[in-house]
Amino acid sequence: MMQEHSFLESVDEQVVLGGFWPGIQLYYPPVKYSPADGVYESMEQASARMRKYAHNTKAHTLLFDLEDGCRQKMLSRELLRQELPLFDNKSFQIALRINPFRTEEYEEDLKLIRDMHPYIDAIVLAKAGEVYGAAEIRDLSAWLVGVDPTIEIQPIIEHPRSLKLAPELMQYSTVRHVVFGIHDFSKAMAIHLTPEGWIDELKTYLRMLLMEARIAGKGVIGGVEVLINKIPMPENCIEPNEVRRWLDLHGENESHVVHQHALVEAQMGLTGKQVIHPYHIHLCKMAFTPSPMQIQRNVDVLQAAIDADALLGGAIKFEGEMLDPPMFGKALQTLLRAYALHSLNETDKAFAMDVIKRLPVHVIRENWPYGMI
Image (cartoon, rainbow, N blue to C red):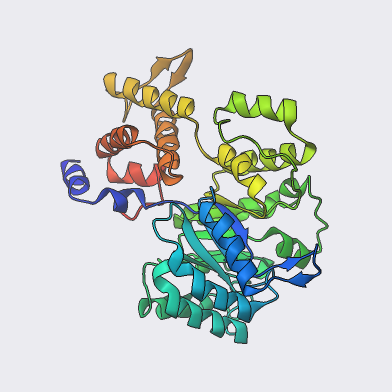
């Protein structure tokens, strides 16, 4: 026990906590089609749009799509070469969704990554494992060693073949999260999804992926919504009762559906969700991120457990509930989830680290498999 504690004292907290999650990933088309004008943007128009909107996103991750959502691929790469260096002092991650392994467009994407790697945090690999299996992740990981080993790979599981290979795809240290690509997956399974019900229609496969990811200590990024709400939820709505009140008074059906799906995904333990519209960001962030009141309650639970010397064994009564170590583990998970989503202040982070240092290493791994201890 003492050896485990002394080990934790000597390890950097970032290693213990495992860094930040992808969180809410906003798909951002580099050069997009303008329905109003009936043409694709020029470089100047795309650059102006990016500087006006992309630099100010509230998403956890800005995801530039070079695959299915991108028609002007060459022009989009040229735009990214020009614009990525301008993302300085950013408060979000930058990810690139690249084309399937060993295609011509894939090779062009790698050239872009090689040149722009200081500005890229993650590579989202489309159609992962469908043609060459886990060798795709192996080869891309090996390539990154010589380019930038800090970049992570997020394979998209878009086919039952990829789901079957999920344990092999997740064995590499470059993979910390995988993406559940619901629309391509449903197409491969010949399942007709509905915008309101897809999370139930694919729940069996999502749970299969979650189980494999949990065993491997990896995260899962949830599905993309197609319903777009016309009224954005105000960013000062952060507590669950405030969110519910706004939805009841102002939210359209689309807002209710998107938020409810995000709530279900968060409750299932997903580490992020991809969205296609800025109005989705706050709706989904509030589903995934513990609120200040929720954080405080879990701090109080853990403090009560420490005061009763029950953290590793014993039960306490707290606000009418009987709580024991599994509940204390869930309280700690809530604090660490808030940290992973950039929502834990320094005081509560220090408290969480103090709790972690009181636990044996195997208990920490049970409660938080995303670290690297």
